[in-house]
Length: 380
Ligand code: ASP
Picture 1 (cartoon, protein in one colour):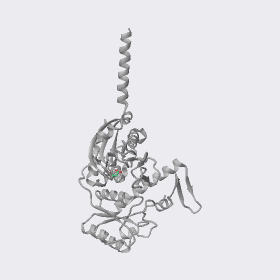
Picture 2 (tube, rainbow, N blue to C red):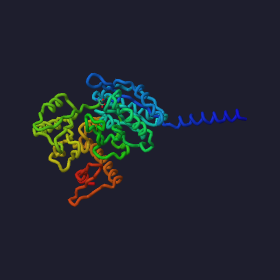
Picture 3 (cartoon, helix red, strand yellow):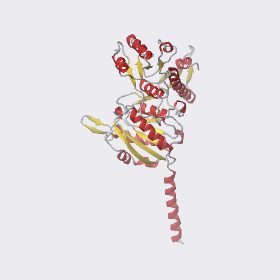
């Protein structure tokens, strides 16, 4: 009898451990490199050195949250990310997430251009399953290595039921950010990312989604940084190289030194798309209420998108249309998404104030965001 009981107990134990293994969600990790895969060298370090196999093996705690498998997609510093890799990565993620056996994807990535990759993926992947990007600001062999903690947060975020159907997310500095609003705000600090608005886990908005399944290359779009006395040479060069579009990272509300603006008008007449963004991290550029008449001059206002994200949206929009008004609609959609993000913040934080002069402010942490311009201009 005792022998029989021992058998039953053993069977229960085996079943229990098997069941708990089966109960773990399955996450596919796609490694692209970055400092999270970096090692020290000379006076600094090299990004993209360590394999994903070794990175994951160094953080056994990950196995408490998910059943992981992985692939080494590339191993580069994210300064070397480009449109070609973005297209391949988006297609690969779409393929993985179509597979019923996977619940989520985590992408290890350098922090320099993670916001661009995240935004690109947000517009080109089409699954409610979570996609989480993760990086680090210190190399893997540093005494201050932040990769392991960020990786744990990324996997926990990927398997959290709350993450289903949300925007592509980025984990850094022990925080979670969303593709639409995240940007690299500090070139050195471990806490390197900020968001235009506080992050409240926006739904993954497929209205602006693009089907890239049959696209092999993207239209050519450059960025020109504005400054007092800005040279016309970069725009001339883009025009001579027959670029399809240029994003002007203008000063203030998307303004540009007069000779550049005049040349931009000529560029529009020749068929180039000109998007006005700003070098200011907050506030955005809108068609209404500014100093430049976009509708008359044929320019497109970037809304809340920073120049690098505006470039991505313009490239993708150009895969579907050459019509300036339709392209404007894509940017308006991005503004609408940002407004919903702001509203979500308002309702969740209950910190919405309407001042006597009609200004609408949101307070989040130690920052105050003035959104009255956006709301009035968009007629909300
Ligand atoms: N240059 C590195 C990269 O973006 C920096 C980092 O990952 O933090 O790949």
